[in-house]
Length: 203
Image 1 (spheres, rainbow, N blue to C red):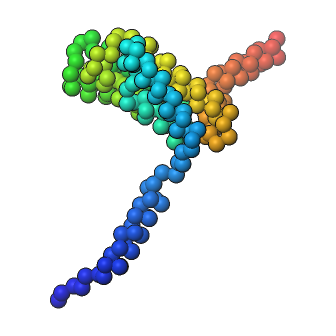
Image 2 (image 1 turned 90 degrees about the vertical axis):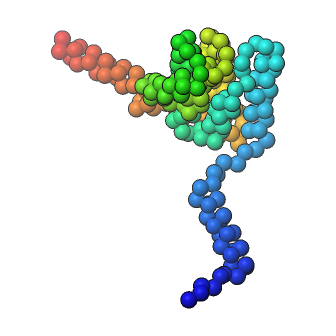
């Protein structure tokens, strides 16, 4: 028994509905504005200027991913200042240390895996940090790449995002506020104060 094919109109409607479902279910909700694009443009312009003046290898793709995370996922843990700065520097440092032993594709893969482990160990997972770990094994970034390039950029990116979130009305809130749960020092200090009060009562 032969099956009848659907009419072209029905097929077009089905494709249109499928595309609509994909966009509604899996599409991103972020809508950039002029301030967002200008910030990204200025950040990249500074990096390009530093690279053009041969100050260092600044214009690297993972930095673009960091800027994207700060804009699109400002509330995510991977976009918070600790993850951005410490995770990126830890990843780049892992790659530099391995580059002292050997270089090449195999070592770059090993650096990515080790950086992933290190960032999880220090609770500073930042996806671009994994890519930064591979750079010293594939390119000649120099031994001071983590401190001369990665650290200044991540501090500038996170700091400017935090500043703009307070100055520009349409900027997403960044970073997440610290709480006693997120900041263990507060709970430790409170515990020490309670212990001190208990000892004073005993006296």
